[in-house]
Image (cartoon, one colour):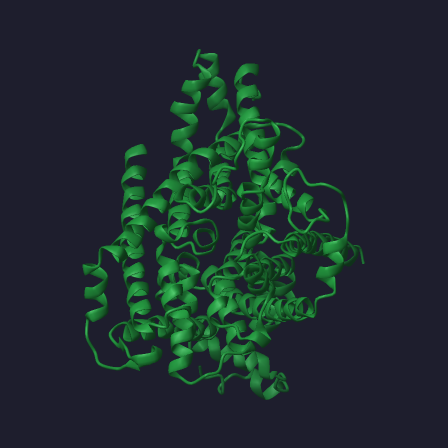
Length: 310
Length: 270
């Protein structure tokens, strides 16, 4: 801009321009605002996410030497070991199966309170919704530990059954795949209830009223209106729960048996117990690829369903 | 518009099942609280007696205070860092147009969908490669990574719903960008920024899976300690630890929310 020719310049004293104004004018002129604002997050993601994951990929090509040392010879030996040993493939399959089971049960169970909260006009609605949020604030380890208190040999369930005279010897309820699924369903429920509730809450009540007036039974109101309309929330919840459950560590570690190891446990075991970092890294890379593929498939499924229901 | 209601039978089934699911959600933790008052060394349900014996033992352990102060320090620092970094990114994506915005939005969510074990392992491999020692700095950075998506989402949601009228008014009246940010945007985001810090504190306070790879004995946090306590099964002190942790993690957000509400009302009345 050429303002030198302006007559005002000679008649008025120049306005004092602060450093901040000059700086922001400069950022605007060069379109630097966005760059300055996202620079911290980009640097942070680069150093905390991209570089660490890259170094895991690098580590996965090395080999374990004597006493947990690392031999820096590049090979695919860790990957071939993983794919050739049925033990490791079983871990991957077990993670996917647990993820799928937890996903199914959690979404089915979460739908009930989500529907009740979404459709109720009770004045306790806010309190009941707040209760759903309480587990978010409660320690995950504590919530998992609570199942040991419930299901242990001297636990609540065995004690109650013995007291009622149903059993003489305590049942063995812990340390199985079923217990892991139970613990994860319990842990994931609030995460599933919130998105499903949000989509049911939005349903126009006059649609439900119209259906009821025209003679629809409650079951068909659920099957033909509430479930289809809440499908986006249900699918969002399902994807979230599946991904979280598949990568779970605390629950299978505390409630599962050694025979039903999950993938995060295998990685942790290689890093902190047997000190085979290269193999642990290869498992981590395989997990990332597997989750990436699962995520892509689930998202694609969501698109197909969204197009189908429109 | 008429109010829709299911017939009484359907409602009874729906609310009955809901009550059962609430029971399923809360019964286990209530039994832990109940068990924490049992004075016996070997606990067996139904619990007998009431005593604070294990509470005395718990509060006299010196490890507790180290772990508690570590947890608080790491949670506060990482939450402020995560809210700052996430908040700036949220402002950029909510208010400005730039190339690669969609990509950035997905990248910010990545730490939420990757297993925490993998994130912890990855950072461990990197810092060992770079000969960086494990300490508070690396722990704070790790927790900031895990919290940042939450900070981003909370601030972004507020910016999108708040609209940009106030900011445009300030700019029209001659304020520069920094003045607008300081005097309009940040006060407008007050509740969101507090909410973000609170949410991040609860995430960091609870984090175990990634933390286990980066702690050393001097930096161990409360989840690390409770985990090592319960690995072998049920112990009386673990019940107390679990009870205290539950009460603290539920009351802190409640108190903070109430305090912030009171502060905001007083501020607005002035």
